[in-house]
Image 1 (cartoon, rainbow, N blue to C red):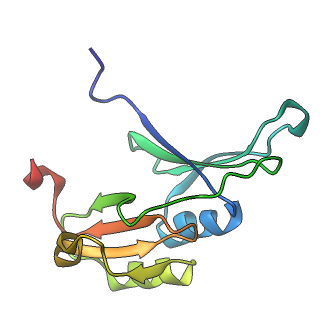
Image 2 (tube, one colour; image 1 turned 45 degrees about the vertical axis):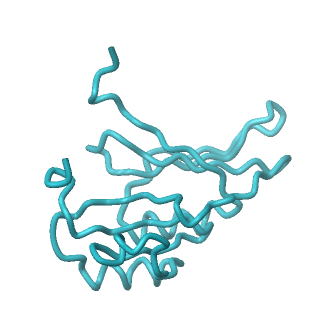
Length: 136
């Protein structure tokens, strides 16, 4: 059986590590957990891991300059953060100033209970005012 406290890594490609770092670090306030420039001779990618040190998850963002993989987000590729309270206007402004773009949600549920912001690659971050504990 898998321990429910297992750490989760969400990995995806990016074509713009610096812009993504600005969005998630400066905009959202995540920590840079790890960064590496890949060994080109060994075929390695550049790598950026962001998250909160105390969390059981983090985002891994990769860039392979030899064979770039273009991000292909859909309107339903969401990273949802349940804030359990009002969404600070200052946070939304910070995310937009860090390269995000506020967009209407594809699913109107998220517009009723939150705000959707696209990151520079087009993946969607939802800031939800609800609590995950009340969702279960």
